[in-house]
Length: 555
RNA sequence: GCCCCCGUAGCUCAGGGGAUAGAGCACUGGUCUCCGGAACCAGGGGCGCAGGUUCGAAUCCUGCCGGGGGCACCA
Image 1 (tube, rainbow, N blue to C red):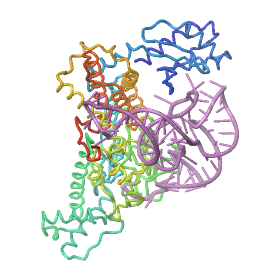
Image 2: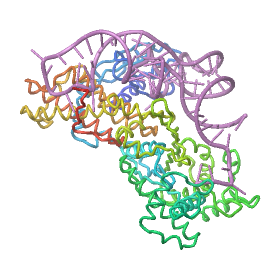
Image 3: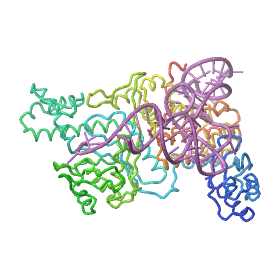
Image 4: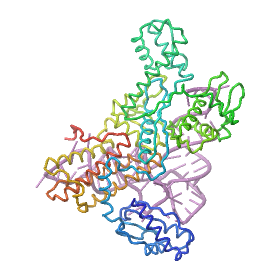
């Protein structure tokens, strides 16, 4: 809001000064936030741009613009500084409005609807249902779910989907692997097939199935038995996955099974568009036409469709349901398949930009100096559940969200556990709990909060109070940026700053005092901060506790 | 060999073309008669290298070096 208003003022000044400056075109007006406090609350670099375009001294341009700046009750001070920046200091009255906004909007503070609303489909996790989720999927889940929440907050209609890969070779291998473990239990000589699933999970699955069905599967014909076991095993694995995701506060709206997709129809459609052809007994997609290194197989020479063919069918299915934008959340190890799928989207007649791929770098688990192996085949993985057990869902989820998706995460379990006191998530949650505690204390002292209409915000003049207001005022913009950049991690940094501003305020300013008017103003500032923290944590999928246990060490 | 990501403080990471590059951890020293000390304040230290674009580059482009990941008729 404030930025838009400032941009309007600057634009008006440029229009006014246009002739004087000999300017043909009004450049785009950007309002930025200076890093240095002495440079005011907001700044415009437009004079630098005009200076470069016209050959005039930017400082003189800035002075001329300031002279033409319309009056506004928003601006308390304007200064020309540095090489030609115009620095604005915002009037306190405008900062106080944020309190009113938060009181009025409550949980909705931070939401906006300025952008054109789109129907967005976020597909994430989509781990194969052949075992428990591992930590990499945890990052996928955290990023995808938070991104969905953030996109929803800026006004999009968002659906979250999990693609269940329940067909093809790996499903068969899964069935055969369970079968081997099942037969083993009856002393039958059987072994997990080459490339199959040798992990402990499959052993447990077989045991559970034996417990329920006894030896009744021994007589079932092999093919039928394997198919049944594959289906049964996947259902059980999906149940476990669902439970794990719920623990992480992840919501999935829809589970789409590969087996339910019409792969033949998709391949047909590519064929009719002359984007597929036969060679060496296989059917190929002309991926090279779309910038991929080479053409890609859709149907193998043995008649089986590839994973990629199913991806094409799913793509058709998704767009066919009327989504404007598809977001795929993928591990970076899948980056090589992006080109061909984008090509397919284009080839099938969709806007290439309609399919976006968020590639997150991998998660490396460590315990101190010891790397934790993550080879599923060797069955040595630390499952996501085990991680949640060790560090807790909030800390796990928050930690997985703190980094840009472009950065690999070194997740040291020992560190997140042993230094949980210093974990940023607790710092933020503590601020929230601390505020709740202060409000409770005030009530105990016989000073419950009065309605906002009776509060005089002008009591808030301390520098830490104004800083906190400025930070709160910035919240909606931070959400918009996180949405635009598809970058949930931005909000972890923001919320840490917000918590820090509160702690500073709290250290400097006593909230509950004899001064009734000041007390009310500070209580409302605190409550607004609490709401702001809660709203951001909600977007991150992390809880905002009313109180936290005191730790021994703290006493 | 080709493709993607990264290289910023001792460590882990922020930094949307702008002014004096920030935070946490670690280290050193401080702060409270009082609302939650899981807090606050202060201090030291840094943009891999070389070019280029720009009034202005940590940021954009090219090359090189270093680290990670990927290059199937696997998923």
